[in-house]
Length: 172
Image (cartoon, rainbow, N blue to C red; front, side, top):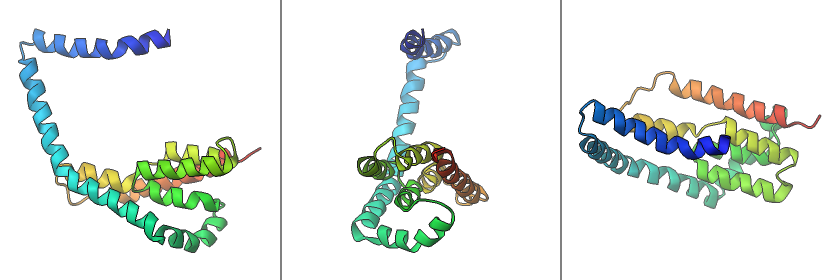
């Protein structure tokens, strides 16, 4: 039943939107084209930010700076019961999902996906967000410069997700 619903849901939603537009006597295709043009403009404006973030993550990994920062943070991480192999994942996850996915796959290869570290990495990936990426992309696209409490709130939520990943993945 769920498989059937998932196959039919997308065509149903598209049909609903087009049908609603036609019944409302809206120029559906013209609205679609206007939205696509706006989307392309937004993507073009965000391309430099995205390129900068991806370059920064590549430089962090290639230069060894990420490993140096992780070695500095190993003592506080041990005090917080955060395993050392998860420190780079927690840091990179703030910036880039694709780089964090690569680090999670490295953890899976080294320790196994069913190990404590593999489970903790999986929970961390699903319960944290790419905070700096989202703030720069979303607020940059609408030209917001004063984010007020967004960054502190997002970092607190990420810390809670990291803590939950360590706590919930511990073997009983």
